[in-house]
Length: 270
Ligand code: ATP
Ligand code: MG
Image (cartoon, rainbow, N blue to C red; front, side):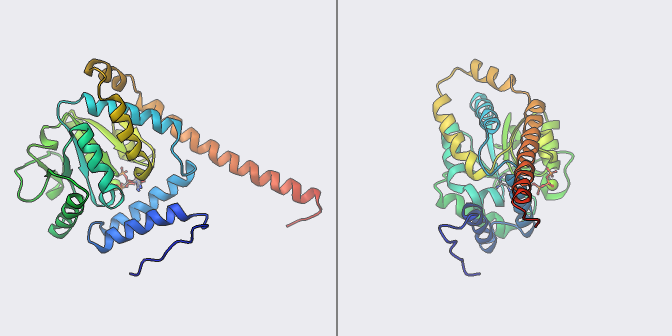
């Protein structure tokens, strides 16, 4: 499909450009068909937070970075959507955190694995785990090829960053006793609910910020990092995120009510 240039003054330009990247990822076999739908769900929730990084997301991203820096074996899981949207940024984050990238696909095909691997290498990744030629272990409780994880990656990780992950896998990782950090725009998803720390924001906006935080926090003692991470309460976080969405909707509703009053005062009925 030919890429359409989004006009500079288009009110939804940023969102449309992000969408184009996912479509392009699909054309390059990086993003599965279902990934296009998952992106649409993310867009809807992004609307509800006003398409900007909230203070709540910043706070959870700090706790997330603290947990990843304090880890003995941190790993960043990469799927099609996260690769299409943030290959470069995840590669930089992986370097700053000393956390390897592991390809982990819900809809596995060898073609998709190769396409993601190529994109990550192009983005500068030197070490990629989870490929077909790597030693693998299995996660109990998950079915078929979704249970496969890299023996030197997620299998032995104590902290795993899962951007845009499916709920089943998040639950399985938690059942194995791992600390799971999720990036997910939907605070109601199973991933968001089951993760230890959920960053409710768009991966495109939050990963660059997480890189900054990692650079700022990398000299903090492990003890202090652990205390920042463990004092984070994900239930409070998710509750705050939902309240934020509700107040965003309420302010939209008030705007409409105010517009209606103005129109009525002016004698305009429609
Ligand atoms: P779950 O399985 O956790 O209940 P789900 O089945 O609703 O979630 P999945 O397709 O399994 O959805 O996971 C994709 C998740 O990624 C969704 O919750 C979606 O809101 C989120 N998402 C999509 N695009 C983005 C994005 N750009 N940034 C952050 N999150 C996103
Ligand atoms: Mg799901």
